[in-house]
Image (cartoon, rainbow over all chains, first blue to last red; front, side, top):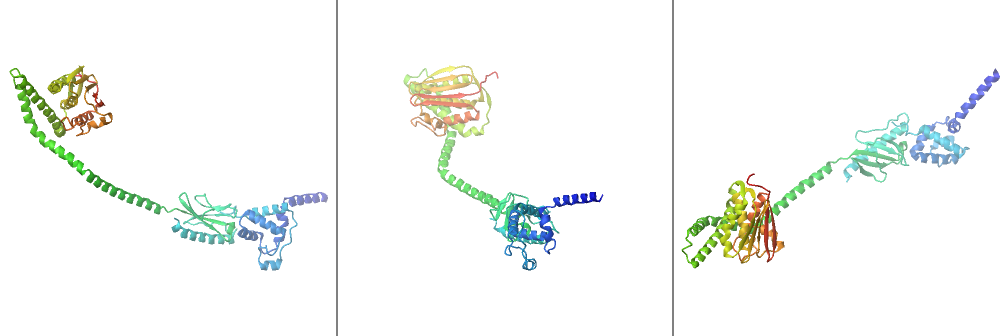
Length: 112
Length: 353
């Protein structure tokens, strides 16, 4: 019986872990503990780079090679949290994560 | 062109930028796009993709700052901070066409005034230019009018007395003299009838009736026989029965003038052929003729192609007036030194109609 329950639990975990996207697995957990939410950051990027392609391209480059100069975060934020580490995700995974990020927060679908 | 609207549109754009900034900062708590009663707007990103639009005319252009599209004016503002991702802000207002209607109204008003002034100047100038010609025509008309009244009694007296004279008891010499008096009196009489018709016919009402043309032609040929004889001109008649519904005085004027001209402009020992059919009659002479290019001018009043013969040049003008009045048709063919043929066509009719 215990064996069966364990198998069911493992199976459920496996299913749920597969439905999580690259973005949710790799971005959300770290940003969850930061004062600037991912949504606020998105609006900052949107205000600075405007279009979908510009935002995604700039973000991708930054994630691959983050520097203080290219960061849009405030000095206080950077002093406290410093610049993030380089991403370990592949280009394909980065594209997937950014696609999801855009989907979640772009204003086009929300404006009324 | 848009100078009046530019400032207003720029103010609207600044107003909308402020509203977008507030919305950006409050997003996503507030998601209602800022709207105004005074204008419509739209935002586009740096890649030219639409973010949101409430434009009534969606045909936008990134090339110009301000432009007309349909009945609207679009103003484009490029933003420094891309609130909500907006690089381009479009402001739309309906075009105020007051200036356009004012311009059209001014063009019509001033155009009409200029046209009226030019027409008035033209009218006066033409009047001044034509005055000498009108005066001479008027002078001739007045002269004819005045003298006509004085001609009737003496001519009638001469003709009546000539008719009553006993030719049998006269010597040949006196007969010839009397003939000359008769010819001269009939010539003046013919002229008198033309002038009377011309000056007084407008006061007379037409009395249309069926006229036996064959009989009328015989009568007129007989009347002009002495005139023709003086020039040794002979008549050759080929007349069939025919009738026309017309005023008797007027058809007599037509025939008299055609026959009189045929005698007047014929050569000595010439011939006049008169043909009558159901739908036309034709008077042909063997006279001096006229150049074909001058044929159309013969109907103009006071036009004479040969000044060696008497007359005022009013006969064919009278003929044309009557022909036109009754919608008849007249054809003239003439050859210099060969002769002239004039044919009058009319609708077929009979005395029994």
